Length: 267
Image 1 (tube, rainbow, N blue to C red):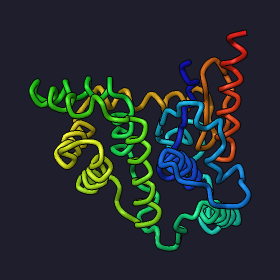
Image 2 (tube, rainbow, N blue to C red; image 1 turned 45 degrees about the vertical axis):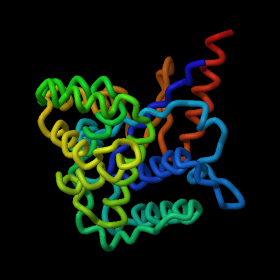
Image 3 (cartoon, rainbow, N blue to C red; image 1 turned 60 degrees about the vertical axis):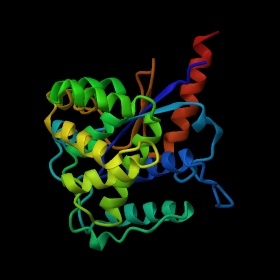
Image 4 (tube, one colour; image 1 turned 60 degrees about the horizontal axis):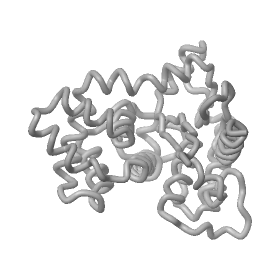
């Protein structure tokens, strides 16, 4: 039976989106959940999570806010709400056994993330990758890329790369839009999947910066967020449901309802 799909709309500048991608990454890595008690914001061991397919849809949330009439950051610097956000994220990271974030050292945050967004779309959607490659590469180069990536686990690769970008942005304070940095992180992601990771990473980053097909396709998620009136990230949707779930702590809820919805449709 085909797994139901849960769409994950997120923004690389969102700390709560970091938690969602981290949970997906740890699940795919088969990392055991070590905390004695699970919480909705940190658990990645719930059986429903392995019974659905998560599709990553990175968006430019700042444009969604602008469309809704909100200017600037939704959580003001120095506010009690921002202090609580970092405390909340810190608690979830601790429960998952992950490095803490020192927000006082995030001199590059928030950052432009259009190119990382596009790379995630390429890694996850092989059809889009091969179509975009045919647009900007020679026929021989496009064929070589297709041969190298056709049998790769696109879900694992896309989630792993997204996790590395989040780690670089929030833990290392790296400039995640830099092409050299992106090649390095993508190469590291691909090294257990292909024989020429650095070369393939360089080609994919080049496609991400040149393809007009990709530029258009990768913005569809942001347009959908605007149309549906999303007011936060991460947000989760699934097929045949006009509603959505907002917030990292509702990821499991979305998976469960997607499963139940699919079962109901078969009755």
